[in-house]
Image 1 (cartoon, rainbow, N blue to C red):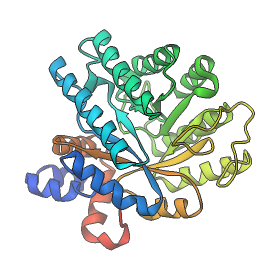
Image 2: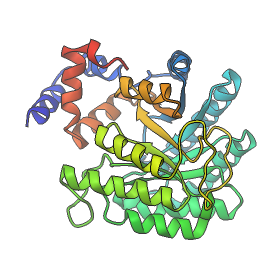
Image 3: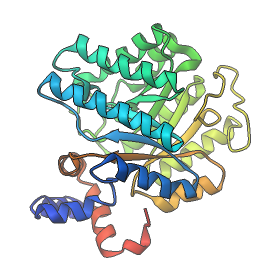
Image 4: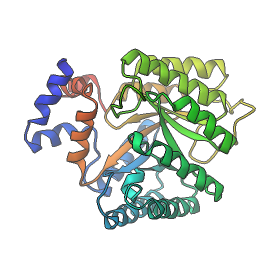
Length: 322
């Protein structure tokens, strides 16, 4: 209730205050801002995935903007020699307006990224496009574009079945980011209690690892991180070791030995640095763009538990350096 109250108060604050809060979690408005943040965090042994803010669009002209901007991002990564890949929202490329054209746009970007041996992650949005997003990954792999994967949300009832289905199609080339999920979905398709969501997320991480997939463990929840570390130890996976799983694929450029830990910019910096110091590959999600305000408001509305993080950042900034 306290967290929800903080969120409600923040939503009523002037835009300058929201910007002050969001500067911890958003690199800035421009690509130069994102590059500056990544260069700073390189000293902490972090690698990155970059997200141009914006998603569901109203015209295909907007999709052209995102395609062109991501090409700029890709070229900037190469120019500055940054260890980074791309995260894209399928709806920002037109998936819900013209599915065929949306797929064409995504394929164009993934194909250009493949020329630089760069990975592209299709972010998972709400349940309206879960199946379509997974199908895009499968179709691109069929076309020989294996530098692409998606996100699976632990809170959805379907996730374990999705892991099985994707593994059937892609085998050792399956590559997921496993997270709890930010979208508050209906009870008939998703777990809603904190304990159930955490357990389902742990189950998804364990299942994906057991099936040989590359797994980006995306969580700031200490119990989920602890469970993941325990599971990795049981599988004899970890820093300094080649991936021992007989059903896993070969290690790829910009990837860890079968897994990595992923965290949002500005969240749980001490935990991320601790994992990096232990030798785990850690990736920071770097969002930037003119849509910083809409992104910030949406995250607050869709996940009121962020309110406590906002309060902590405001009242005790020294306790959780980004």
